[in-house]
Length: 560
Image (cartoon, rainbow, N blue to C red; front, side, top):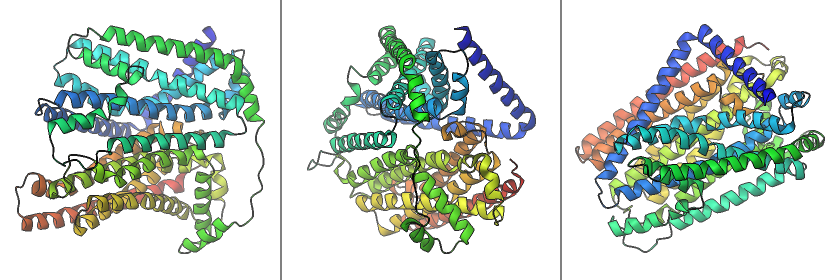
């Protein structure tokens, strides 16, 4: 144990030194980011709190909706954390140079595993703590819970996030030890399984075809019953849901479910430690010796097609964009996450007509559903621009000087990264928005407006991600998950969400006044639409220009 404590002390000391250096050198930037994060947290909290108040107006089903939503929230969160931890743990355990150094120390493999998995746990779970806490705190305030609720909330959350980390660590160890030459095959098969599960889930909740499409209590209960899989008693999502809901009142069941969750965390921790003690070092040796060279043609068909499509770029910029595309697709752990989430969104949009008890022939429902779909698509895009675009410069690593020595100006390197980000965002986002609008059968004017909003959101998010990535590069780290967990990644996510929410809120004001509240006539609605579109366009142009200017100045000052 002393050796493990020494490792933790060293990591903590390094973190505190880095944090104090940031506070000393960038006080203004830290203050701006902190205030922005607090404002974003407050906005999310208000949204969830107002949603809970709205659900309370439906006396017969309000509490039922909260129970099922809470269970589904923890179920989906657990699945995403398992995937995230498996990917991060594999890179941290087997691809990190620090792991090689740790094996040279007189520290058992099991303790090295615990140390590395703790670090991965913090990197993978910070988003849950930031985005999930507003909903859970709003739930406690909504039910007027006492201090015991917040105590149990901290305890349940701390234990719950440990379970996916341990499961992800076990998966990484098994793959490295027994399938060291088949990581990509295993990953692709895992993606296929998750995708099929998602298809079954979407098909299940949209299977109520042919029903009378009216909002009735009995029908809504029937619809919620199709989400009951998240309430299965054998799932940790059910345990934490029951424990937290019990804590909102008398907390009579909370101790039992907390101890149940804790016992499984201890069991998985012991199992992971023993498994790592047996297989971690062997797996590390197999992975380190399994690198196989592959001969690539000097010029492939992909190169020829890409060169034709990107003819408007200079030859050097074209090569950088092609290099980034190849780098992305050669790493399944990168594009697999996009495939899963955007694939599930596509399946949902295609089947949206089958969702019961929503009359998509009414203008109000067309507006609400299409707007929420736009928000869901662009929120997913914002997380992925932070996840994949922000680290682009940092992932060049210390080899960035090679690009810097090319006969190409650095601003062309910046524009190459920006075009790569913008093209990918448009290719992914606009087809999804079109499918959503087409399936909802919105008027053509509303469809073009949604597509335009999607386009300018892609423009702003791409410029923010690339520019912040240039402002705060991290050439010492080769793990994208760790790069985005730093100061710059947090800033990128906060700015992206603020920009996105501003665009969506301003753009939705005319439709909300006309379709939902009915307070304006069609002429006023058209005028407000024009005004909001002009404001959004002006704001998007300003944000993009400012971001690009900061990025161009920063990339000229980058030193390795």
